[in-house]
Image (tube, rainbow, N blue to C red; front, side, top):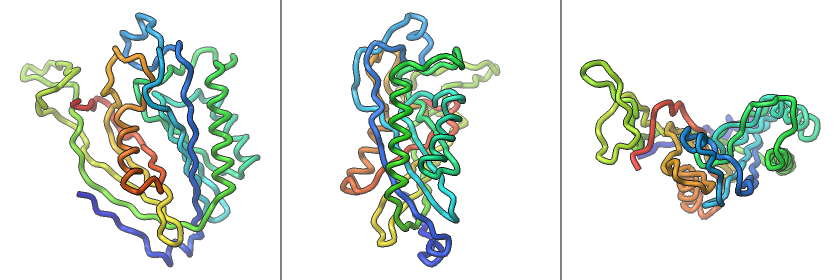
Length: 259
């Protein structure tokens, strides 16, 4: 069950909140190293294709003459800090973005991003991805509408703690848990924030949950957003594709999915 509290319309109007969304396909070409799973990296197993698209999803919010852009990525991690700093400067000039937040879902089925050679050139797909993200933020900034927001909270149990503390005090790694052995600690909380336009039409729905997107293991060599993409598709289908769902990874630490 999930309860949602919508802020009074008068309060939303008082703060002059405006919002807009956009998304762009970031799927990389095959033949690149994939993120996560040390054994896959050690063996230098490269990607062979795409199972489902990897997206950047954008939410731009404006209030009190300040604009915030939230960008969620279907990647294992975000781009290196030097590139993000340059993107912030660019979007401040081109789209009036005061604050830029970039976050990744932590999928282990995306292309790898490294911090090596911070002053060196990016790989072609990374440069292309950053350009696409910039364009998506600028596009959203041109379509801002009056908005209001509400929040909700519930509980979902799809994960377990992969570090099992035994009676002797030693830790055993549970890399799989098909029988759903009870483990702790874990956080089952799922938190949502919904952004509507002034008429109540949904624009965006943000979902925060803590669990590693590792339904696919190290034997998978196809790009995928993992369970995150399935969740978003399910949410958007429930709204007849009239809402853009964005996933915000929580403190997933040692939390793996049962499946």
